[in-house]
Image 1 (cartoon, rainbow, N blue to C red):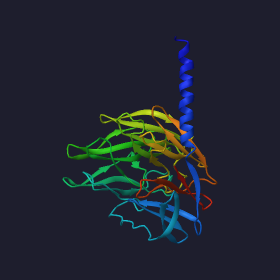
Image 2: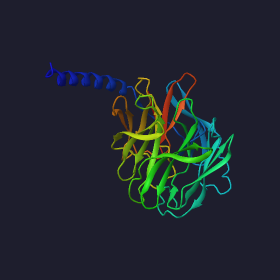
Image 3: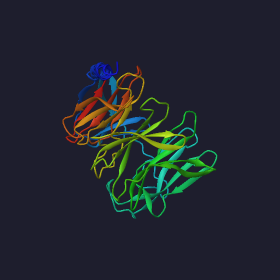
Image 4: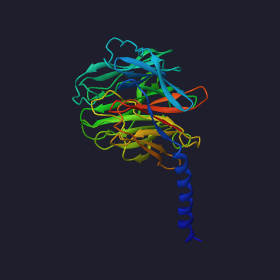
Length: 333
């Protein structure tokens, strides 16, 4: 009986692979007609805009295809006093109403995001505590553009995830939250180990379906491209999986949202769409029960913009992204 187990396992794996291959075949790359070269795609609190030259358009998903309609320029909130000049303000609906990076500093000479200015402080607005602050310390900076407000526990308070980079040890992924009516780093991944080595968060969801929320992040997206899945369990971060051949950032770019989360294979569990290391393909990766690539869709040029999720009233969705050659392409199930 024992001798039959490997054969049975192989047979099951073959059936499973064939099933997901069939689902992956339903994913298609579609070129989106544009009147000019696409230079940016931005999602501002659910309002998606596409920049073509000096004008902005709004994408519309209808009958499985994306078209562009005239749209207004994104409305960006003014940088608060002492805020990071090119930082984004994040908004939440629970215990964290707003969050932003502040205290610009040049003490970390890396410039991975296009300049030598990083953040030394995070500021949060809380309905009960008012404005609360957390500093990175003189041995570190927040090497990021936005503190991401996320809910890591069902029915629980919001947290913030952000990239914290140590001057001598490189980047870590930090989870920030309230404790004893103060703002604290509740958990943190080990720093990469040497200076000028960075990571970029890619998504937050229960990707493997085990009931714990996971944080996906790409370690060294320019040099290594290793996707890691960290699970938030009882107030700590536990590394679950590693996947090679990924990247969600071009060095020197301010585009950080080069990924998207959705259920691509229809199994009820979120999957992650993320570029390959050379950014010439979009990989659709599932993590339940183990990491697997359910689709790899080649694109005509490197992906350079945010990957935006376009939805319509019927519940259909598609992904929209801009390429290095100025084209826009969509991926739709």
